[in-house]
Length: 248
Ligand SMILES: C[S@@+](CC[C@H](N)C(=O)[O-])C[C@H]1O[C@@H](n2cnc3c(N)ncnc32)[C@H](O)[C@@H]1O
Image 1 (tube, rainbow, N blue to C red):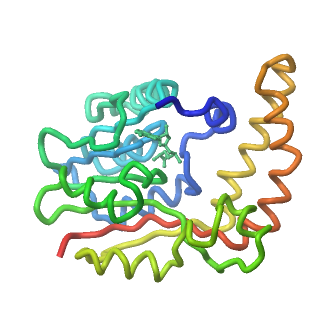
Image 2 (image 1 turned 120 degrees about the vertical axis):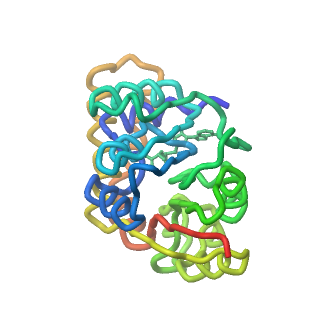
Image 3 (image 1 turned 45 degrees about the horizontal axis):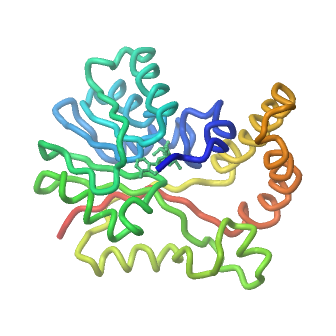
């Protein structure tokens, strides 16, 4: 499965490919109480920033898996840059069904719960790599406010209101599936802006630098509408959080 080139372009300047800032990644690592003897598997790890940051700050070891070759290359380079290349490994692979050879303390999937068909299926996948008593971490979208008009639904990356749960709906469903919610950190408007608005700049720079590229009409159309969709709908309606669960 090839990841659309649009993401490589729009997220070219991003290290974190979700609506978290480095400060929120740090908050989450501290909240999880990571220690040097802990190991982690990060499925759909993107450019590996979370794993590299936590390897540096908490001296954990870990493996990241992502399907997009440019992101894996960026993760390997980032590990070298932060001096943690001896602690982390990055693998180019489909994370769907990926299970580690050795069970680990933390298994995560931030911003890609489609690899397990949604949050519950993804937690079941993560559980297969987890030590007893380990932490399963997912990052996912939810409705901050459930939209009632079609423009707001479509403008929030959704086809229908059922595409995302409410915050309580998400937590309740996972608890019902046998997990305890033990920690959470949420995106806010500032951290969403860092993720989304930075993509507009990347797209504009790409269009200016490569006016003949075949992607330009598509990117031009996106740039024409993206800010409006974001400030009218996504910024108001869409939430994103990282949720740490332990099996009951
Ligand atoms: C929203 S980004 C999140 C990346 C990273 N977890 C982060 O938070 O910075 C989604 C990531 O999922 C990866 N991805 C999508 N489908 C995948 C699959 N089947 N297996 C592995 N990675 C996948 C993409 O390449 C991308 O890096």
